[in-house]
Image (cartoon, rainbow, N blue to C red):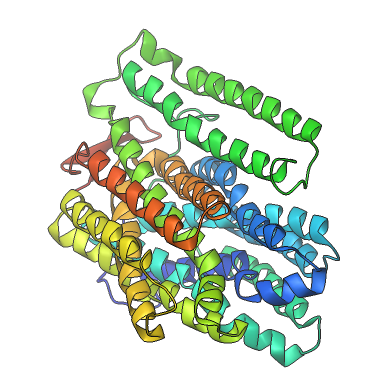
Amino acid sequence: MSQEKFNLLSFTGKMKILHLSWMVFFITFFVWFNHAPLLGAIAASLGLEKAQVKTLLILNVALTIPARILIGMLTDKYGPRITYAALLFVSSIPCFMFAMADDFAQAAIARFMMGFIGAGFVVGIRMVSEWFPANELGTAEGIYGGWGNFGSAAAAMLLPTIALLFGGDDGWRYAIGVTGALSLVFSFIWYLNVSDTPKGSTYFKPKKSGGMEVTSKGDFYFLLLMKIPMYAALAVLTWKLSPAGVTLISEAAANGIYIALIAIFIYDCYGAWRVNQEIFHTPVPEMHRYKFKQVAVLNVLYFATFGSELAVVSMLPLFFSETFGLDPVKAGLVASAYAFMNLMSRPGGGWISDRFGRKKTLLILTAGLAGGYALMAMTNASWPLWVAVVVAMACSFFVQAGEGAVFAAVPLIKRRLTGQIAGMTGAYGNVGAVIYLTVLSMVSYQAFFLVIAATAVVGFIALLAMEEPKGHMAEIKDDGTVELINVG
């Protein structure tokens, strides 16, 4: 763990790692949401119907659910350096595919594959946790998440202008192609300039691969229960693409996917049992235990915070355009105010957590989140535009500060599992996005915002069961000695 001073103006040691981490995360979000501000031009170019446009929004966040779980495992096993580099490199391919799409089917397939880049967030969470001590971790993770997350706002602000500069009906294609090139270039910049840990530190890896380790029988069954919503969200997406929705796939194909999801779920549960079977006959020593309920509570909170952000960032340009009659460029700029708050809100949430406690901070921010979305549900054309923007920004503060506070706690649960815990919590954010966007496809904007507010209330209730991280967590080095890592 690096002990140098926390200085944002420095670009050496742990600060260099932090800056490079948020930069590559910025690129992932810039690429992931490159379609949102260009939806009007994309729809006109490809002749898309309104239902097909909304389907693209859902597809964009779907694959990220299993991808975050997978990338979390790969990060814990192989380290953040090679994992992030490979992810950026591979994700440039579907980006170029989307830029060259000629019809809805091609765009839908590319957009679905693009969801994989959204898993990049998980990698940086583990990287930052390796370089910063507990008393700086919330702030560092908040800067990483907030400044990186700003990539979606940057896409909303810059890509319509880039498309106009290229001009013509294909301007949007060139703009999206530029984001793919950035992803490709930064895969090499990242790989050549970072290391997984400070010199002399141990990179703790899971004892077994293929599933998340838990430390009690009750937690094992709790883990299986928490897997269900992730598969349910993918089933909802399948239903949306079936003849009951937009008819992108046939009923037979949909039924095949349902069967495959059930089979994968059963295999996933078997993998969890294979990794954890020892706990059924050999109790885990108290020193090495952690409580899975900590993970579960953070999952629920990220469902409401990041899930709503993903959904709202995707639909907000259309919301402002349709509600206030703005052209696509102006609507994109106005909507970017919501994501713009990431620059300070998410680091702010992490900083407040470092100073005043993880649980107390989350309780306050979750309550504010519920109130913020209740206000957004009241927004209509009779409001002055500036008031609607201020409400969106205020709501955004609580959403993104809440995200920062969630990931101020995630790395303090079990170090060697940080990638997997971050992957599961992050996946719940995407579960939330799929559910919220599916709700949006069936109800008004006002009802959509009210549904988010209601789930935030559920998150607040779940949060009451969370325990404040304190003391130390124990990890075993390769030589068999135990290292105690301070968590607060």
